[in-house]
Amino acid sequence: MGTLTIRIDEQLENDLERLASSQHRTKSDLAREMLRKRIAVERFRELRRKALPLAEAAGYITDEDVFNDVS
Image (cartoon, rainbow, N blue to C red; front, top):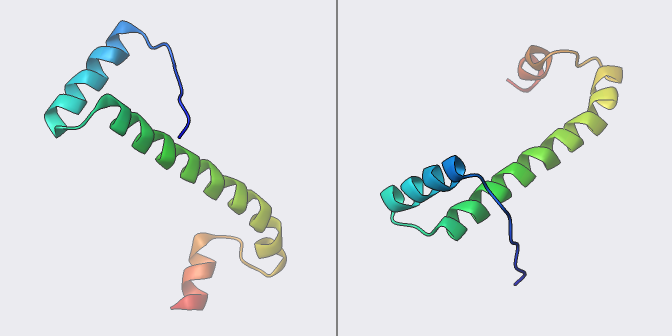
C-alpha cells in the first residue's frame, strides 16, 4: 500500500475531522473513498468523451435517443 501526504487548509481539516467523527471513520478512510469516487467519475468522463463521436455517428445525439432505443 502506498502513502500520500497532502497539505490542506485549516477549514478543510476541520470539515474532514467533523465528518470523520460523525461517521465513526478515520480521515484516511474518508479521503480514500473520496479519491476513489473522483477517479471513477474522471474515468467515466473519459470513456464518455471517447464514445460520444461513435454514438453520434450511430444517431444517438441525446440521452433520450438512448432511452428510446433501450426501452
